Length: 131
Image (tube, rainbow, N blue to C red; front, side, top):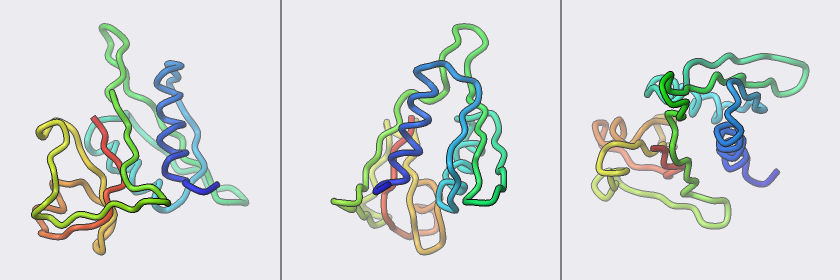
């Protein structure tokens, strides 16, 4: 697999389109951090890390509206790709959907949202946009 983050986002996107309540994704430290951010920001209900002999799995409970069964995540967009990395400084960081969405960055201080990176005044690699 050449791009595990794109695979992670695609699995989430497919689960949303198929209206699955739970999705299992192969785990990595970066995927675990992204999952924690998604849960903290309210895009998913819950998650659980399952250890096994190999790399482990992440079980994610998707979040849907009770009224019209619409998912909390509308768009998952991969920004920095293996063939073309995208980096930004905290000064040039653009707001996602005018502040309604989040950008997930990989920084020297770890994986965080664009707002957290702006507050800490650090830039990094823009992994994805979620709104």
